[in-house]
Amino acid sequence: MKGSHLEKFTSAVASIAVSSLIEELELTPKPGLVDKKNTGAHKDLTFQLMRASADSLRDTVKEIVFVSYGRLPSQSLREEIAAIGRDGEKRMFEVTDGINTHKGAIWSIGLLASAFSTGKGRFTTEEILSMAGKLARYPDRYCPVTDTNGKRVIKKFGVKGAKGEAQQGFPHIRQFSLPMLNHSRAMGLTEEKAKLYALLSLMAHLDDTCILHRGGSDGLSSVKEQAAFFLISGDFDLLNQMDEEFIHQNISPGGSADLLAATLFLDKISKIQSLNEVSNEYQLI
Image 1 (cartoon, rainbow, N blue to C red):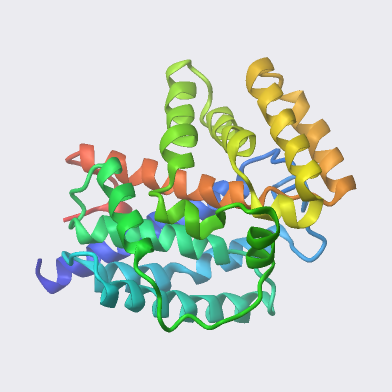
Image 2 (image 1 turned 60 degrees about the vertical axis):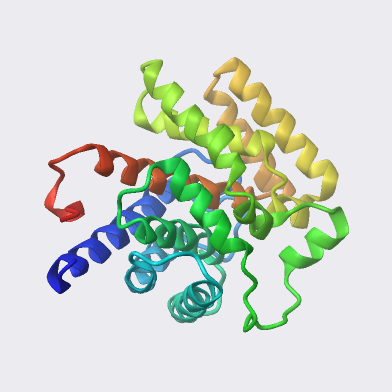
C-alpha cells in the first residue's frame, strides 16, 4: 500500500474508532452511565469531557493502525501497540485532568484496530476477534506494575476482567452484543433501541469489574437480573428506573460501555468490508 493510501486507511479506522466512542456516549438512556440525559453514577464526569476524551484518542488509533499494517501477531507488535496505548492514556489524562474516561476503550478498541490492520482491512469480524485475542495473549514486558481498581477486583472476585476478555477473543461481543445488535435491527427496531439492547445484553452477562468495584457481587447480580428482565420485557421505561437506582447505589456498568463501543467499532468496519462505495470519511482505498 502506497504512503497516501496507508494514510487514508489509518485516518479512516481512527475516525471509525472515535465515532464509535461518541455513539456510545450519545446513546440515551444508559443506566448508571454518562449520556445526553445525565452523568449517571459519575460525579467527576461530564458529557463534554467524555466527548473531548474520545476526540483525543484519534492519533492513538492512527498510530496503532499504522504500526500494525500487514504484520503477523508477535511479542514486538504487542509491545509496540501497548507503548502507543500508554502514550494515548497520557494524552487522555491531559485532556481530562487526570480522570479515567476511556482507558478500557483504548485497550479494547486499540487491539481490535490493530487486528483489523494486520489483515490490511480484509479480515472478517471473526478473524479480527481471533487476531485480537492472539495479540492480547502476548505479555507486555514493559507494562508498569501498578495496583489498579481493576486488578484488585479481579483478585478479590476471581473474574477475568478486560484483559481476560481480550485474551479470549472478546467472547461477550461475539456471543451477545454483536448478535443482539444485528437481531434487533432485523426485528425492525431503531438504531438507538438496537444499541440499547446490545448494551443490556452485555450487562446481563458480563462480570463487569466497574460494577464489582462499586457494588460488589450483590450489585453485579442485581444489575445482571435487571438487564435480563429488560431483555425479556422490552420495556424501555425500565431503563430510566434502572438509571435512577444505579445512580442512587453509585453503580456504573463501565466495562459494558467499553465493550459496546468496541461492538459498534466492529459493526462499522464490517460494513466497510462488504461495500465498494462508502463515504469519503471512511474510505478504505
